[in-house]
Image (tube, rainbow, N blue to C red; front, side):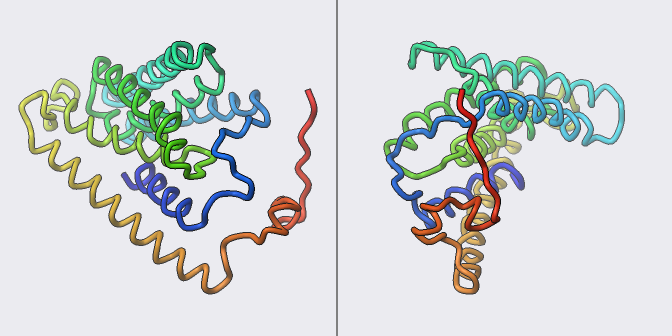
Length: 244
C-alpha cells in the first residue's frame, strides 16, 4: 500500500493536473531500447526477492515460501501477458513479458508471506488480466498520458494484490493469518480499509503538494522547453538515440 498504491495514485493525480505531453496523440510511445528494458526488468525481478523474502529478516521456511510465491506469481503474470498479447494483438512481445512480470511482482508483494503456490498463480493471472485491460483499453479510452503505466500497472496492481491477500491468505503459511477463502472475512475488510485509506491519503496529499510546489517554483515545463527537450533544458545533458 505505501509503495505501489501510493505511487500509482500519486502518478494519476499528477498526470491529470500536469496534463499530457506536447503533441501527445494517445498512442503508446515506442520503447527506446528494448535490451535495457529487459535488463531493468531482470534487475527488478532479482532484487524483489530481497524485500519480499528478506523482509522477515531470517533465512527460514517463511522466507523460502515468500521467495517461491514471489517467483511463481511473477512468472505466471509474465506468461499470462504474453498469451494476452498473442491472442489480442497477434504478436507476443518482450515488452509485454517485462510489463507482466512487473505487474506480478507488484501484486504478490503484500501476499508473499501469506499465500502458497496456488494463491501466487491466481494473483499472477488476475493482476495481469486487469492491468492489461487498464493499459490497453482504459488508458486510451480516457486519454490520460501515463507514459510509464505507473497507475495502470503499479497502482492497479498494488490494489489488486492488497485485496487478493484478503481472499487468499492461508493459515498453511502463517497460522495466525487467513483470508476470506479460509473463513476469515475480517482480513478482507482490513485490506479494503487500508487500500481505500491509502488512495484517499495519497490523492489528497499529492494535490496539496502539487499546489505548493507549483506556486513556489512551477512544475510544468514551458512549450519551448518541451520542444528543445527536457534533457537539455532541465539538466543540460544530451540523450541520443542510436539507430538500429
